[in-house]
Every structure is written in C-alpha cells, then in structure tokens.
Image 1 (cartoon, helix red, strand yellow):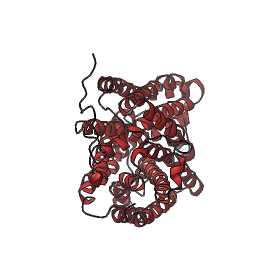
Image 2 (spheres, rainbow, N blue to C red; image 1 turned 180 degrees about the horizontal axis):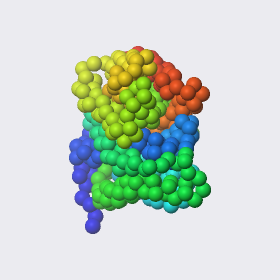
Image 3 (tube, one colour; image 1 turned 30 degrees about the vertical axis):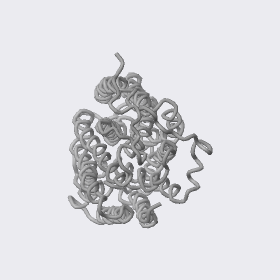
Image 4 (tube, rainbow, N blue to C red; image 1 turned 90 degrees about the vertical axis):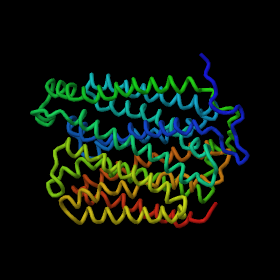
Length: 425
C-alpha cells in the first residue's frame, strides 16, 4: 500500500530548510541504531583478541576494517543518496547493515577471523550510507541558526545507542566464562572452541539483523515522504573540490582525528581497566563500564545542545579538546579507580566534538550538503587509522598508557580548529 507523505509536497521553507518536523524522530532513531552498532566493536574486540590470540595491532584490525568502509563507501554513498533520495538511501543502508550482521553466521561456522573482518566491513558500509542520510537531513530539518544545537541533540541519541548496546553486548558476548583459553588449545580443539565461543556473537548480530529488517520495512513505507529534494551536482571529483575551502578542509581533518581518538580509547577500555594497576576487573565487568564512556558523551550532548545556543561553538569545541587532553594526562599519571574513571570521563569531553566539527566545517554548503556529508564520512576513516596506530604503539612500548599519547595529539589539533572556526563562515 502506498504511503501518505508526512510533509507538504513542497516542504522547503523560505529559508531553505525542510518543514517536516515528524522526520526529526525518524532521523534520531537512525542515530540511535548506527551509534549502538558501532559501539559493539568495543565489546567484540577483547573477545576476538582472546579467541584468535591476537596482539593489540591485530585486534585493532576490527576497527580498521569497520572504519575503512567510510573511505570506500563515503563518496559513492553520497552519490547514491543524491540519486535515490534520503528515504530510499536510508533503506539501502539499513538493508546493507542487515546483510553484514548475517555474515557473522558463516564467520562463526568457519571460525575464521578474516570473515569476521569482512562482515564488519559490510556492516559498516550500511552504517556509512545511513550516516550520509542522517547528518545533512537533521541539518535541513529546522532553521540554520539552531543547526549546531539540533545536530548535537540528535547526536545525543547516537550516544544513547552507544551507551545501551555495549552494556547488553558485554552480558551476551563477554558473559561466557570458559575454563580454558584459546592459547591453551590447538588444531581441531581450537577450531571447535572458537566456533562455540563465537555463538554468542552470532546470536547478538542475528537479532540485530531481524530488527534492521523491520526498521527498513517501516522506512520503505514512507519512502515518498520528502518531495522536491534539492541536490546540487558535484563540480569536482565527487565533491572533493570542497577540500579547497580552508574551513571545510581543516574540519574534515579534525573529523578524521576525532573519530580516530574516540574509537582508539573505546577499543582499549576493557583491556585498560583489566590491568592490575588500574582497576583489575574481570572482562565482563570491564565491558559493562564501556557504557560510562559512551554515556558521558550522551549526557554531554544533551547539555551541549543547550550550551551551544548561547556560547560560541568554536570556543566550546576548543574547551572540550583541552578537557580531553587533561583527562588523558591524569589517567596515564595515576593508578586505581582515578586512572580508570578519568579515562571513562573522556567520553564527556567528546560529547559535542563530532556534531560541532561537522556543523562548523559545513557552514554555508547549502545544496552541496550531501557532497559535504560524503566527504566527512570519508574522513571518519580516522577510526580505522588512528586505533591501528595506537595498537602498534601499545605493542611497541608494551604500555597502554604510552599509547594514549596519540589521542592526546589528536585532541590538541581539534582544540586549534575550534579557535580557528570561532568566527562565522
């Protein structure tokens, strides 16, 4: 049955935004879904690290393969959305995510790390397409003067997903207390152990596949909601000419650094908190605390959405960058609960970074918003590169504390962008 449009056939308001308030709930739901799925990587990394006896560099290939999809799919994803529209683009992304979840089944049956990595790449490809839809759409669903606040508020729902998913993921995926470890087994016994222990991962992602199929079906019902979408053709190679704009280019680089730093820290939380000189926690207990890291970002985004209405966004970003550096210095120079909880508190400092960098970088893009979103999504490949380098640094120095120096440098550059972009475009 054909759906009835929720918005007026010509939903564009005089100032250029889309007058369809009902869609804001839909977009916030998308933020919740792809945020939660992304954060599950922090739970499966320690699981796969043990099962396949990986070092930190090898374990970080989980994030590398997941976030590499942003570089591969970002620009084609933007082209796809421009061709078929926001709503159909969302369906394409959700279906791709579903297929990625289902690939965990053959990965478990064959007990092959490489297939797990491929499944994560396909899953992330769908996430990329959904983000290409969500970021510019939330910017268009309201007046330009409140875009920083509105995008930060939507990102809070992203953080709600990243808070909820790891908690239950830790219970499901890290809950198995085997009496042996992969390092003690070999041959057929090792393969059987890996297959059995990865069943928890399969069950979790199979459930997500069913949920994604339902959501995709609902979105398809409203595929004709938006009429008269305005998408400007790229004047360069798929919009790469936008990087010539100093503000946008600097902002895209900071998205690369921010996502890399955020993901690197999240990926190390379980192993960091398990250290005897930090909190000495068991794997599942440490996994449950991942929610505090992402929960801090959620709380901070609700607060930040109000602050950004009255305080210069660039200055807020600079302050947040300096706060993150301070917390990382404290966590590396202390022990016990102080060391653990200051690391988790970096999530609060992260709160406003992505939406603020995104909106500052994309000011005045207008009809080229989809191009800008595609480039920004390519920059999210920082989530592949920075964590891998952080893992290499951890292996080289045999110290997770020393590895955190790299995220510190990332936050320093982000603070500089905040000062640079404090003036309107």
